[in-house]
Length: 176
Length: 75
Image (cartoon, rainbow over all chains, first blue to last red; front, side, top):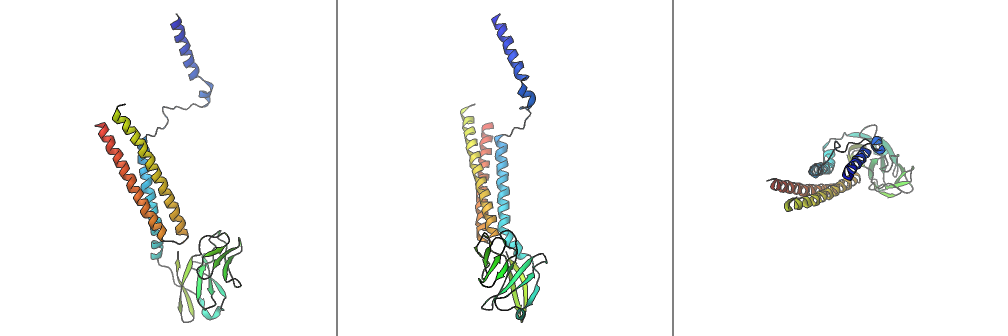
């Protein structure tokens, strides 16, 4: 008799477990749930490793691919129209890419993208400090190399390659 | 579970962790190379790509080792 009672008790406990309130609220079927084996996980990681290695190779090859792409040759202006320590705005390679050309003290011409590498504001030439200045967050870039030396920007400005033919200046490429 | 299967389970877990660490290192290399690319530095992405490829080869060899070990156990 006591054995039968124990059996009944156990069955009742099972019933209670099955009909438990929390099971009704969260009817998750664990057995039919997706089960990922370690082998599947290892294969997934190996494929991920291959994908990341491929992405790394693409990133490494990107500058060479961009270099290979031909950039247009566009007239920027005439040297005589730009005073020493003066600047001129132009667009290169498309009208949506603003650039700035600066004629330095020694007569050398340099051009950079006008888009600040911090938050894409337009940089302007600051004659007094001989720098390219971003008024949004007070970032400064050197005119010689386009490298940031003050403020929040950390990346240099893309440099525009220039060519001179007599009095005329041409933009021929972008150094990424 | 016999002795060889238990050994296989431990080995499998260890290799899973090693491959996982390799993938994390690769992700770090990818982030570093993208950052270098944005700074217009071309040598760092190249070395990062070589390092990533090396880690992938190591990961691949580990997976092959696991597969071979698995076959032996099944036989």
